[in-house]
Length: 151
Image (cartoon, rainbow, N blue to C red; front, side):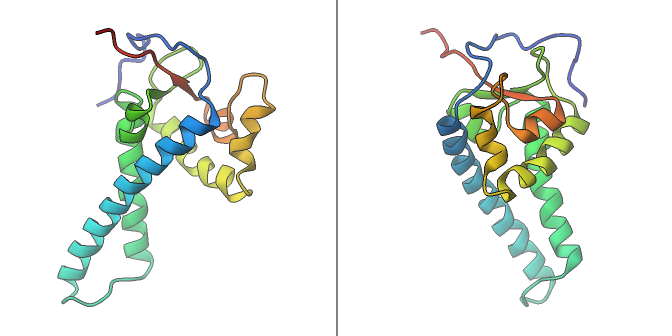
């Protein structure tokens, strides 16, 4: 199900760009969820493999698809993973709309490049006038802070 791209998110961002600290802490939260998913998929694959270790390109592709599926599902439906929700971050387009499945794939793949270059892709937000990382710039997305809900 594709998000309604004609409507921006109902809650407007309070800051057009999230800082590095919030992003890193949210990534740690999401890493814990992803590790759990990997463990679960690995346990199921091991059970189907007569309790022998599973390896090879098919298994690695399955793990990759599960991890991408996790991020794509949350980024395209509400813009927030578990870690992003905890730290009030949201992935969106520069005009405040939900990101598409294509943008989520580009963002996901380019994030590996951002991290793989000794983190320079993430640190780029300190030098960019729009305060976006390499993978956000490449995918046409941004990460914003959303306000606390009113009590």
